Image (cartoon, rainbow, N blue to C red):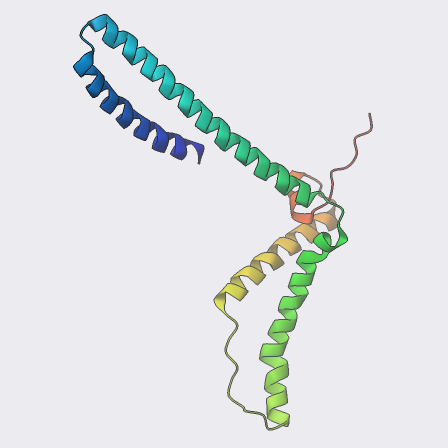
Length: 161
């Protein structure tokens, strides 16, 4: 990501520098002045690119710290959110494919089939279920590394020192 942005900005600044150099060539008459101008322009461009990279890095660090804070909190709701979504999905599936069809058969309700759950539901729900299952399996076998702690939301073990 960083190299894409750097390439994008550097190609833009490179075009700008060459355009400015063409204008400056009209007013600069000696080779020494051209060389000094070129060095100053390159320094300004490098300074600007450095500022852009620092801004991008600080933004990424802020996002990482927010994500880490959310994953390491002791909020019971946050730790239970994934299982709640799994159970909610199971209820939606049961209602759509079992309860409503059975009720429509016994209580003379319109027997036309209900619309299928959308593909977005299946994609999101199956991703949540897979993540939850992997995390729970890792917890049960006692795996404790950075990846499993991110998946399960558990804190790293305290280091005795």
